[in-house]
Image (cartoon, rainbow, N blue to C red; front, side):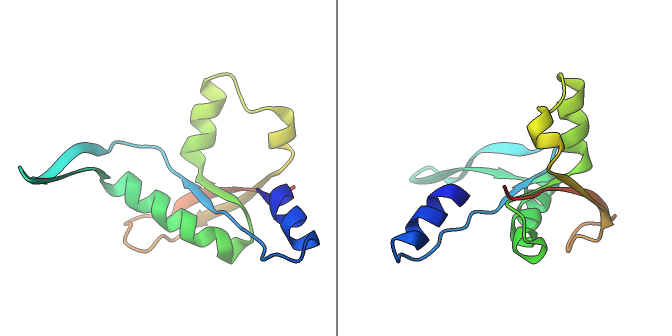
Length: 111
């Protein structure tokens, strides 16, 4: 997305930026509502934290912001590629609005 945005700017167009928040945990997922107005949704603290992290990407100037639990899970599954590991920035424990305890955050710096 960053490369595409740079090409847009070079053509005089408005830049595009995407922020992604990742958190790991249990969620509740399914249809919610009444019979004639059902919506498929995902809810829970995990979803709320991920949403807050997405919002915080702008504050930290990064494209991806994730909880340490995501990195730990990736390492258990074989690890992250070296080109990603070199871009990780440890932000430490950070208070998250609406969440009881601070969440240890890791950012992936933009290319």
